[in-house]
Amino acid sequence: MTTTKEKKKKEETKDGEYLITYTRHLEKRLRNLETEKQLLDAERLRLEQELHSLRNEIDRLREPPLVSATIIDILDDSKGRAIVKSSTGPSFVVNASRKVKNEKINPGMRVALNQRTFAIMEILPTKLDPFVKGMEVIDSIPDISYSDVGGLEDQMQEVRETVELPLKKPELFKKIGIEPPKGVLLYGAPGTGKTLLAKAVAHETEATFIRIIGSELVQKFIGEGARLVREIFNLAKMKAPTILFIDELDAIGSQRLKIATSGDREVQRTLMQLLSELDGFDMRGDVKIIGATNRVDILDPALLRPGRFDRMIEFPIPDEVSRESIFKIHTRNLTVEDDPNIKKFVNLTEGATGADIKAICTEAGMYAIRRDADMIKENDFLDAVNKVMRKAKEKFVDSRLYM
Image 1 (tube, rainbow, N blue to C red):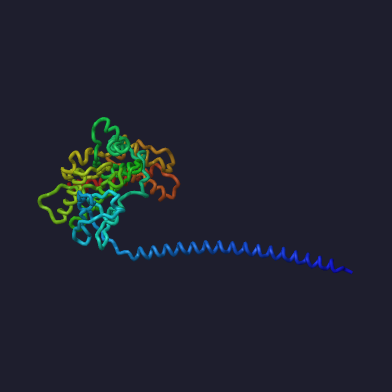
Image 2 (cartoon, rainbow, N blue to C red):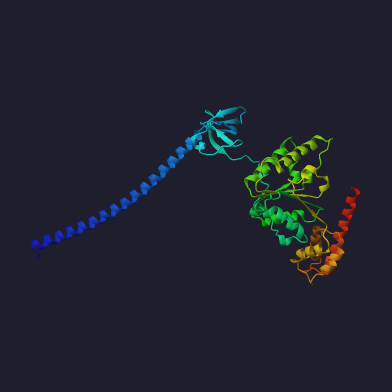
């Protein structure tokens, strides 16, 4: 039989074990509550930040809209005031906010004005037509290098001296004491490689490349063409160093006539704006101009004088050596049954341009595809030469009828 002391001892042991177990349970629950509290604090902090963000968004939306304006002049006084022309019409003498006073404000800048006080609140970016922005070649740089241009070594050298060298090594011109050429005009018959060389320049240079087609500057409304020219050159200055390529220059650069229609007069206004931008009072900086045309004989003399296009580079019809070089370039990636007799093709293509030779190689491939063959034979080239050269001669005869 157990004694009273033993019973008491067992009861005390049970009570002790119960207290230990209960204490551990409470400690575990306390830890869980602390973890839950940390999660709730983090959620509360996130909600407070979201509430603060929403209140800021509401305050921003409640702000009155700003009025756009253009700075006309800066007043020479200690208050830092300026004369602005509002987009609503009238001009105002206004103050600048503290945020803007630390920045340099120049005439011609676009700014935002407070509706009540008309104070300058911020400087706006330069306004550019989306049509002008689309002329900048960014993602679609032509995959054409100088090695893809055949028979134009002298022309290539002159273009590189005029366009690339002033951008890459301006110190050479300073050392000699001359100003680098401002622009170069490429002229010659269609298909002689003018646009191809411009694409090679776009590929090889690290400068911004802006491409314009002359006919794109011929607009319907009075002053629109001149405005586009002005904005194109502003974009070129902003993105400097820049190469500006004007293809089909004769579309807006033809000689001005005394008797002209309203459409002709609008083209002449665009031309006069172009002349002003090419050699005006404002410095162009690192903006180099490449012009291309098939009809240099109809261009306005004011456009051709030194200072606007300092170099005029002729692209002649390829001679035998040039045609052989062009044939090698266009046949290097072709699958030909035997080594093509390029000398023979050169002798058969007298008077052909680079574009004609490229067409001959393409037609030879088409003849091979027509035969369901895997390789191009020499007869395919001969058939292609007959076809392309016949068309080239017909075009030449047709063009002579209108001369």
